[in-house]
Length: 463
Image (cartoon, rainbow, N blue to C red; front, side):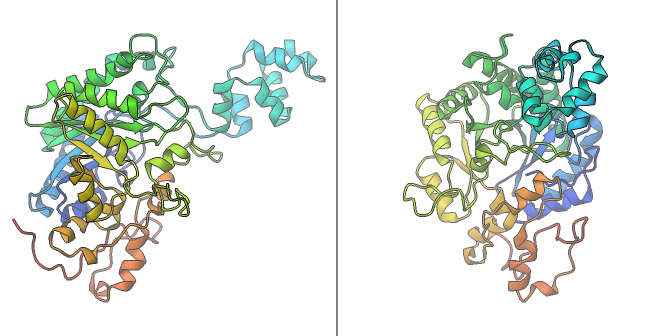
């Protein structure tokens, strides 16, 4: 989970240490550090690992997690690459500055009564004429990508091979990922999770929507080629005991996107390549995201694919007996991948996620053979101690996630992510909470930045 607590140049802060230290207090089996950029480029308050200067800070993070978990928690870091996406521009700014004028624009304008003279007009006059058009007439003169740039913000795709930096991705990414993994190992992490899910670069290479004709798209083998080359490069850059896994989509949930059958093929290829674990997610794509407000960037969790990625309690009609609801909703894709991987003779562990917030639900998923590991994000945010409470038989004390996506709303605005339960239910319901020192607050002073402590914790965990 990206908490937006790093500096603008991607450097670790005390707030980042507090964030992961608090999760480590609950001693989960594995803790995965947020999506961390492998390039040394501006990307806001997102952690980065694209240069050796980030290693000392990351090493501090490893030490904090080890100390506060009593050495029980394995620590991985998720490494990723992403392509550029622009904020939705003001209409006038787009037409006067960003739109690349084409002859088709002039010809189309000249066919509209009152605009005939624009066929030979200077560029500034053509832009002014476009600005005077009714919006629907303007959209009719723009091609699909131009309309997207105007109403959603320009977004790069892996198929934009007319751009040199996009064409060169297959030559550059394996080394970038490998160097990031090398830095992670030198910082003391137990492994890396290659991020090939959601709206990120490697996920776009895997997608059936990838139309690259250079051997890195179109066919199943072509779409898998770069992720496999990245995995091989990462594996070769670290020691044999360092875990290398991958996170990918069980279903893209977009028109023309990958489905469970595609995920099965990907899982088989990754298992054969020797990856140490396969982590399944769902959706979270830009393709079906809602148009953002002017001045904001599109957010890949606002459309149907995003809702499937982070389902809320409102995702299905409770009167529909066939509705799955948010709890363990995406387990079927992990189960399909695991069955195929096992049938092929591989023992690669499969990680399932999506709406797990009780011991019983997690235990059923494991006992059924649907997965080998259960991962939980939002429930762990609500109560970082829930692992310990389960192990100690204190399940009644678990603070349950309500799956309203309060946290996701903050993430959408790139604000420090918190949980609504930290300040509301827990603080007011626990009579001992008032004895705890006043916590750090968010930059607006309205929200506590760290989950409340487990007041009255009944002793240390069993060894």
